[in-house]
Image (cartoon, rainbow, N blue to C red; front, side, top):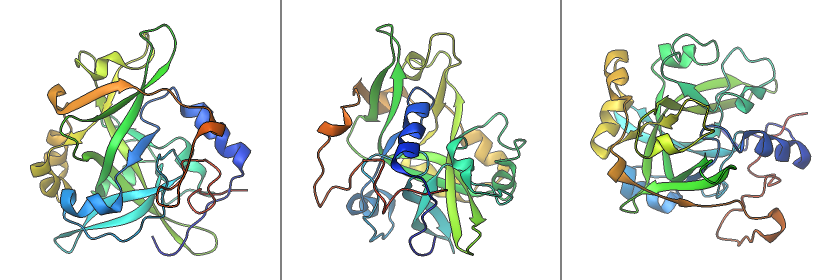
Length: 258
């Protein structure tokens, strides 16, 4: 993505997006900071102007294949297909089911073109209902290294001519998974993101459809650790100059739409 692409929404509307997605599939995660990307993924990335916690509509790093190498770029969390009229699809296209990703209008172009990406993640969040109500839980790697979530990306041209790169996390059925089966409402199907191992990243970025489908599988439960992480009231969230704010009103990160 070139320049500072902003797609328009005011603070009130952005807050509504957060509230509408807080109990859903993976709608909220912690992007890996740029100083950890090189060591973990072998990419050079000098951007640090992105939020500490990403929600649909925010910019965050993704890793793609570029001339047989890996490159990192900021992209919009929530895929915007090329045919979108207004670019607002990110609100609903942040997760793509592997069972239907090649058929759904929003995702099939990215899938057909093999637009694979890796979403570098320090943690992602899911709701647990074990107490009788939704409680946000944090899911991170057991060894403290960044996680590599499998995703797809696409490119959309805004009315002003700017090119917007966006992405979606790929999800699989998690019924029976000893960890991911604990999350989401009791009556809902259990779903999970796909966590690639370090030695799968290069094959994934250049995979055929057949090979990609084989890699979209459940991860070993011992790879992760989980803990309750309830959302704190907005007014008590602190920020510093070196740690980008997760406030949904951050104009430098929030995509804005009229």
